[in-house]
Image 1: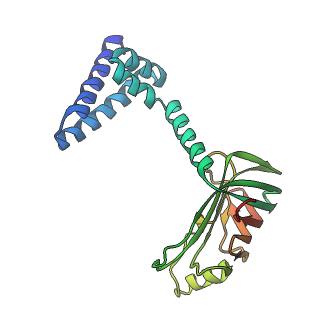
Image 2: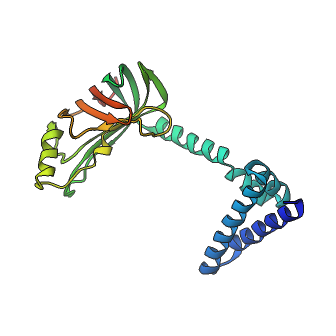
Image 3: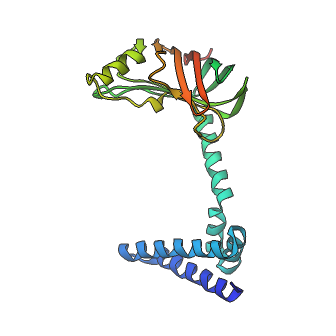
Length: 239
């Protein structure tokens, strides 16, 4: 494809971008958005992503070129990562003590940003969710540790929760099914099928919730194999 054809694709992108920005007609804006996305795809397919972005950045007027630059995948990823770090920096912290055995082996003892979600009083199926996320993966024996989420289904306040018994009630049709993927650990930066989640067939699933923390003993499965996670999370205020 020659530069003339590439220029036509860039012009098509620009025209639809202008329509998308300026029109007050909802249907016309939707059509322009679709056409603009198609033109952007065709341009990238024709000359490659990097050259495609360069063509648009050099062809468009500065304010639109700036929008193209902001839409570069690396810039989008950088913004999302900074937003994540800012969010974590604003959260309270909790002390995690974690021991892993089985496919994953190692331990972690550290304070991490905490997101604690209490159930609403009128929830039919109340859940307590405790989420700890590391700003960057932490070395942890055989692998790394990035995030741990423990959700206590049918939460009724501090006490002992036997997930295996609750799952037996699910299978008997006594209670609604709860999401086992909400009890999971992320190993690295991005989620993969190597991340273990609670295995309802493991026979191991105890969570003891106190006023300012919990302990856990969980049988976890992933594409890599079976692991056991034991430990505690303490979210009591620091001195």
